[in-house]
Length: 167
Image 1 (cartoon, helix red, strand yellow):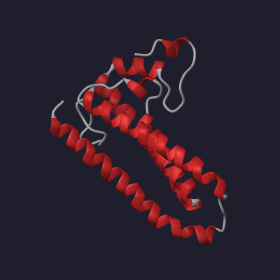
Image 2 (image 1 turned 120 degrees about the vertical axis):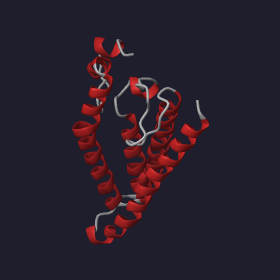
Image 3 (image 1 turned 180 degrees about the horizontal axis):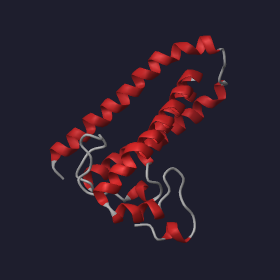
């Protein structure tokens, strides 16, 4: 694995996290306007969800660098098709990890505004995946991606015979 690919991936992933952290600081003041509280007992749950999301994100970035020889950035994608690790369970684990970090942080900070930001992220990710990413991957990788889509769910793991035949 070329070290410069790993460095680029780390920089892009850090910038992505910084962007959403910055957006969270922008929306959090709206909590007072919304007037909806999140109970204190969810703080520990939020920390666990955010930690799970962070581990999932790290695992996905490592898979992109090691197996795909690329980064998570759409302008510097993996050169090879990545269908290992969490990508055997769902097609978009990186977005699930990012949402988990945002949602977990929202619970840990007891911020309804950040929960809304997380939902906006999820909607944006879904639209990006459906309108750009999947058609792009289909053109780039052809039948191997079409077969992968049949076996692995976009957001929710598939059950039964199809899933057992995963790559």
